[in-house]
Image (cartoon, rainbow, N blue to C red):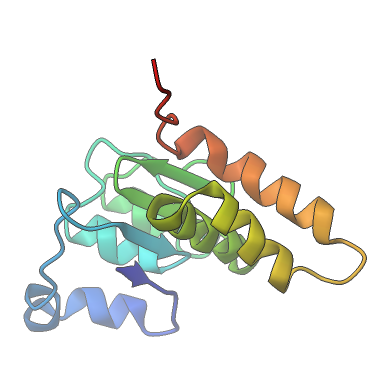
Length: 141
């Protein structure tokens, strides 16, 4: 489940009836949020003891919800990831793809959407940002 950003996020999180309909479970789902979408996860209590990334406008509200906000574009812990800044959504997408299909699939997807002449640089940057948050590869032994 990916929670995107939007102009009415504050109204959404203030609507208890709407928020009650969101039944998210990081034990069985990958959960991601980009920019103000991080406020939705924070309000649902899904970022307790988990630092988050968000945009600069939403940062104070996420902090008010009791969540530590990092000064970086991406972070994940377990099945929960957050990205800060519109262009950091590429990192969130790459993380989801890598978790579901493997790092090679994420590299291929980022390569496909990256600007011509900058593909290798974009792939390297994306993988550098998500690699610390991917499960260690299983080795035969």
